[in-house]
Image (cartoon, rainbow, N blue to C red):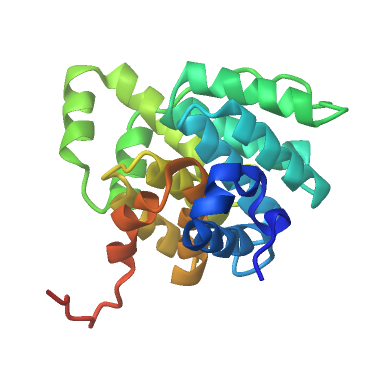
Length: 237
């Protein structure tokens, strides 16, 4: 029997409770995946759901999800991974909004002493792009040609989001995927491959993507689900 506790605030909407038992039962099923340990720990899934909510500009949902993660053992360092990835993938506005959510969720924001920004060495960006993508994507090739300094900046932010992520490269990729799924982004294909390269299983990728459902609905899955077909699977009409 589905309860409002399984669903959360959506289950308290009187009209849905009176007219939409199938909808609420389905949502409870998604919440059961997101709220419990599975292929991905529940505390990290709470972070993924919170960051996806920021992507969709739902700060109240983001605060609720992050608070749930903190109750499950999420640390400030863990949450900083979301701040880093949003800074790169969604820019200053989203990152600052999530910084406010973090500040409201933790009593102690102690952090290491500030570090000086790093600089890319000559050729470092090109080598990183080639190693990660296999071949340099056309947009990055054009950025390297037209504005090499911006290409270096792109490399540094990409490296900060994945290679130097406070969680791990694997969970950094999964966090990126939750955001991309929430935004229905075609970039998800690149990061499905990146997550697999970092050691993620398809079950882990699936759970990360499902963390976007509270903020972006079931459409979040549709943009990524087909990318998880086994290599020998034959598409069906």
